Amino acid sequence: MSTGPDQDPSVVESDDPDQIRVEIEETRGELGETVEALAAKADVKAQLEQKKDELKGQLEEKRGEAKVKMAEVKEKVSHLTAQDVKDAAQKVPAKVQELPAKVQERRKPALISLAVLGAWMLRRRRKRRKGGDG
Image (cartoon, rainbow, N blue to C red):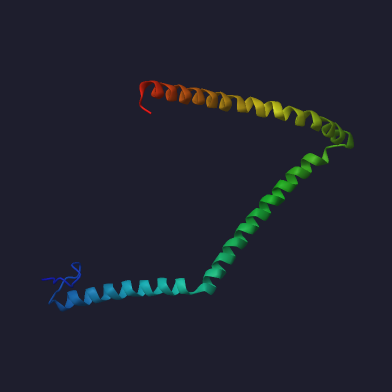
């Protein structure tokens, strides 16, 4: 059992015909799998067909979800009267005016953080100048 510099160390030389047959069958099996994988990669038409089927399935799923959502909305809307719609429409301008205040409230922590960071950086820079580091 020797392997030369040009030989794969995983290949075992054997004088036993049964062992050689087993290795040949294993190699044939591996080669067959490799050929099948390469053939599948080369078969663009089959890949397109598979992708098409996949997308059709996704489309059907989304269509079902949309139907359920439409039924839910229809149920909610069917109870509304014209007056309900008018009342809701009148509330919209007030809601829109509330938005800037809400946005400002959300910005405050970020602005405060930036101010603190800026002050810290300025202080650090001044200390470096006084200390002669920069």
